[in-house]
Length: 265
Image (cartoon, rainbow, N blue to C red; front, side, top):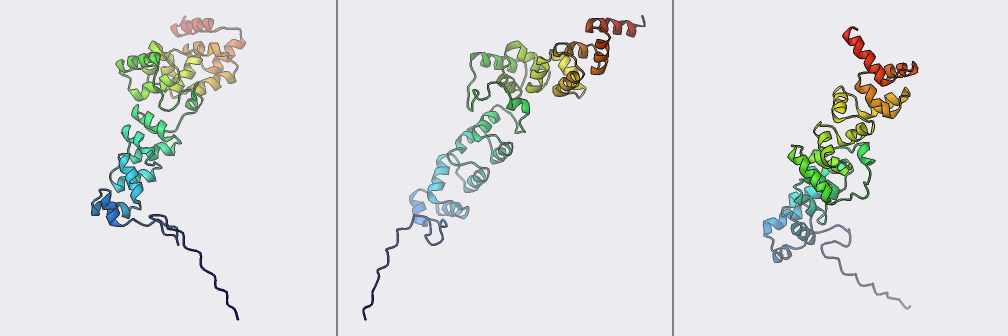
């Protein structure tokens, strides 16, 4: 009886640092770490945190020299290829996590952190800001924007407050006048579109009313947009203004009537 013998296929060479039977990474021998300049204790710490030798090298090249810090950055979603910019911006892994929770890409988070901004949800006005796609991550200010930034800083406006105004297209003294009122840049843009002055907008905001509420309340009663700030600035509610307009009274006449009433005339 003839018996057929089949030769087994030779095993493929194992990938360094990985067990072929389980596919799980395994640490390189300590002598390999020592050849790369790691002390034995240091190598053991990298291994204990789940890093291979090449990965540890990449983190150290990027400026992260301790395995526990590399683990924190990795948990925060950073890689050796993205962490450098965040480190240069002075960010910590905790900062990276907070920015990531709000859906801000790593590079943009670094830029905004560098400008002094705190992680927070993006307002809808920021998501709709004009030229957003043009104002890419890492964008430097043009000459006009840089001049506006200097003017705002000289006026005592912090960089984290000034930068959103610049990104929304505010320039020069107008940017300073609105930012000095401690109004959110997006809110200021809407108040400005409604015809409010910075002082008028600040008074309305101090009453707990935002620009969206002003816009919807006055539009709902049919007051034209170019009259909203005048009626509101004269102290009339949306309903009062709508009622007077139905009687044929314009805002200037209403202001005179109110002045006479207040003086007892």
